Image (cartoon, rainbow, N blue to C red; front, side):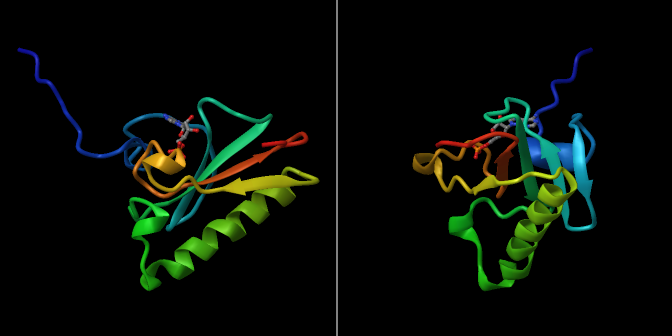
Length: 115
Ligand code: AMP
């Protein structure tokens, strides 16, 4: 008998739960950073809070520490990879280009990022 398993979790929650694989660049109790599966720059890393905040538009004051931490993890990764410069980007909502409904900060670098 085949059981069709439909997870209600988004891709990032499934990566955090180790249900699907990812290349992990950084992890602690609150944050995970993974390589983007379809990179738009030589280095493209997604920095993701483990708490599921669907988008920046849904964040509350309670989330300000974790959102600030995403920036500090980006800085740490930038230093570790000796990046001379990089771009940090949140897509917010469908019309802002957000596809996965779980906050994530894009770190793009490793060359001149012109978009
Ligand atoms: P956004 O458009 O801001 O929601 O960005 C979602 C990002 O997640 C895109 O850049 C995708 O390439 C990336 N992505 C989708 N699935 C995976 C995955 N399984 N592992 C790593 N990155 C992924």
